Image (cartoon, rainbow, N blue to C red; front, side, top):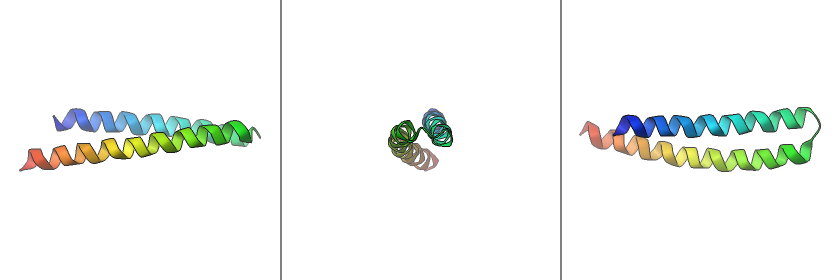
Length: 65
């Protein structure tokens, strides 16, 4: 079902955004080591979210035809 795929993609993006915000907070507080660790995790989550989004898009295209 395309709708479930898009929901999963949105959840993945929300998780990545949360970690990005945490990284920014750590950097603002001067804890650059923790900020870097969170940034790296956020990047991996963002890449994963992108892959989930591509899958959702593909399912939508298939359902539309």
